[in-house]
Image 1 (cartoon, helix red, strand yellow):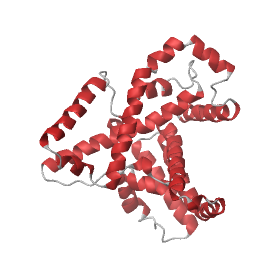
Image 2 (cartoon, helix red, strand yellow):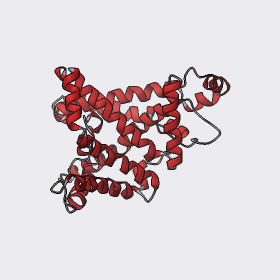
Image 3 (cartoon, rainbow, N blue to C red):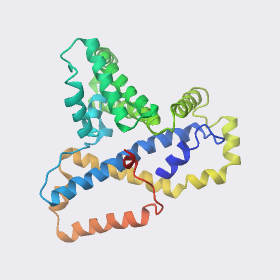
Length: 291
């Protein structure tokens, strides 16, 4: 996924202008990439510590299954959000102050989280967006409850939860554009193209300009979007989602540890061989090694 993401994001505002679906797919792929990147090596740290008898706290709990932005930050980078709550939000007064001051405290917290990632306007914009999400969520809570009751969607809890998950994931992905982009202007360029083409061009697929672009750049397009690699990526995303659903029902490790040794080691071998044969051989730096 990183190959596709970097190919799209690194050419924003250059001579190459991708069709809108490319920007949308690249954004979703980046959301999955940064989660796999960061969650995986914190899991490695947790597992390594456990070998020595040290229990470390969880840092991720299926964040993309969140039904609100508040829940997302209770599941994403838990150690950082907990630190920001204890050492920034609560000392500022938390929610024990008047509502306008509480909103101010929330925005300060997320600006601090943005600056923590680096002194860049893109990270500040990303943090400010999440602060805006949190404030808007609190401000519109009553309205959203009335809307659910009047529309009747609250009578279908599973559908209602699915909609909330989709909206939350969409908002998080929108903010990731600013996190990943090289500059705020690049992020605005992508957002402007996504919005304009979504409204006027059915995601730009049938726009004459993009049809000509695709026809004239088929070899370039295929070089960064190999159908086989995409299929593998999508299958792995589905597999990861299935594993996380199992984690939501209990400790998935116990499902394996209670099985016969031959079955356990067969699964281990399959996973290791999948990494060796399906992994990308070229070096792609870990995202959070930059911070």
